[in-house]
Image 1 (cartoon, helix red, strand yellow):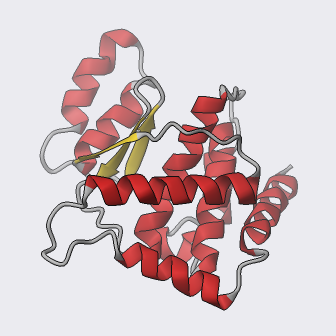
Image 2 (cartoon, one colour):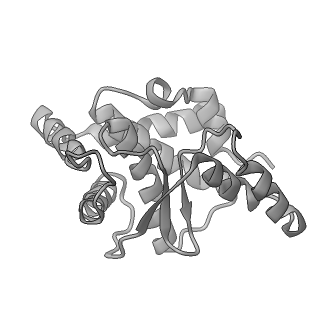
Image 3 (spheres, helix red, strand yellow):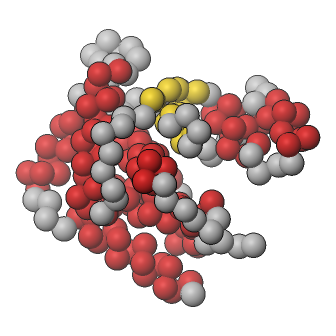
Amino acid sequence: MKLAIGSLVAALCVLATVGYTAADKASMQADVSLLVPADGGPVAEAAIAATVREISTWLVETFGLPPTDDVPQVKFATSAWLTAMRYRRLLPVALQDAAADELAAPGSVSDVVAIYDDATGTVYLGDTWRGDSPADMSVLVHEMVHHLQNRAGSRFSCSEEREMLAYAAQEGWLALFGTSLEREFGIDRLTLLLRTKCLG
């Protein structure tokens, strides 16, 4: 089964780069840099909305996700808050608030860089996200997959299963710029397998 999942993710990543010329890739890279204002201030809402629409179109055309005109809200949060929100839903209701408080405490360490909230249709990006690199943009690509899945009413056997296409799209985006999940985020094939396979 490991080979099948790994092969599926690899095949989806190859599909993501088919049909894009060097000029297309250069244009995408130019679009990435437009998201960071010259003064280094917060990313403009209009720029994010336009970028989200472009990413949505790319995901629909490349991975066959159902289109939607609905643009998600995009908000920024600390890494600790993102971690707390991601893992609190895995706990029994009675423990959720206490665990969220502990995870959000100053000094807690996290590898969570973004989350998508299905209930509100909101993408939460880490407060260090600038949108000025293929790696940053790939995080938004990943969360946009979840937005399109949510709006299409997609159902999955487990939360890990919905991650398969999100990681494949993120890897496909990164490949357009000559990089990868492993190089940018330290996500190797084994880690990817564990994050995309239902274990229980």
